[in-house]
Length: 516
Image (cartoon, rainbow, N blue to C red; front, side, top):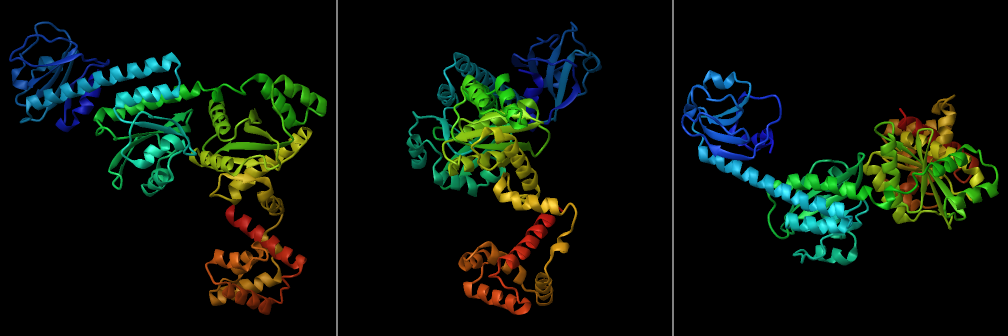
């Protein structure tokens, strides 16, 4: 065990370096210093009193010493260059230090043995569940591994849980809703899941449980979370280091998964890139190349463009993100085009993705600080170039106009795209109707919210109840304000052109506000 790792565990004794060798030193055992001891075994860590050191060593070999500061250190020990010597305060109990070192080295031996078992399982190719089963025996507590949608990828099935909700999870295959709510209350979802690379401890007093959580990252991308509960025994100090190492083994195992092997062929990248660039203008060629690549195409398609919120994508990060998207949206295909990550989806129905797939996708994007623009649905791959541009526009405009979101659909943000084009040459006030100016002045003079009321009234078409609810006011209050607006301005809200002028200005003003 490397000596500095031992010293970290002895921090409560406040060791201070007096002399250190430059290269790493590995310790195999530990002993007490004998008074006047003339030589020392180089792989042993000795503990004793400074007063017990001899004036000089008989042979000039290496020595590793922790001394209680009760006398001056002989100069031969500080000038040798081959000695690691650390002082701890006078009055420290020698046996307390020795016992602590013994505990540290026992933990290290336990850790080494445990990791050997886990690594043997990894090399056997038995899969993630086998890794979890062996790790559960090593930790002596049950383990859960789930993805960002709370689907349980692997768990300890043999354990009889004290917590009934955990017992239910054996058959559910998902994290129980009450446990998700518990994690929300504890701040685990907002502060930890998919966001931190540190181990987090959480105590659930309502269940009398303590949990350890560790995110599994691959190329900096969140792919799963490991959770361990003290169902069988309290956690040990070494469990934290063991969990740190186990998370890396899980990442290696998950990288071996088929999700991480598909869609990386050169032929796929060329085919999808040719579709996006518009090079293929023959439906027969599209069908033939798709058949060669064994890409099962359906009637409807969508294109997704992914951008990184932190930096420009590295190729490995792009691949990791694409692989994880396939977990959220199975059967998709991807390529890298103009430094963007492009995903193709094909499904029998125009809606393409289900609500649960979209929600899982949103969680993944949020957890990893990445953004996605989604095109409209289309049924002719020869138009892929057009819909690729839609997806690019969706993410470009969405990031600026909807800063709290990570997923943008082109039909939803197209008004803001139009706003971005208009505002390149004009200002919002150039499109402000006289009626709006009257309302703005009235709001300023009376500290009222007539303009916001009008905006919500127009947004919830023919649904004043929903509009009132969004403003947290009564329906009658909303209708009173609308009548006040008509009275002040003479605005005819039954006229389509009048409504369009007002809504155009409101969209322009909103986009301008969000991008400045």
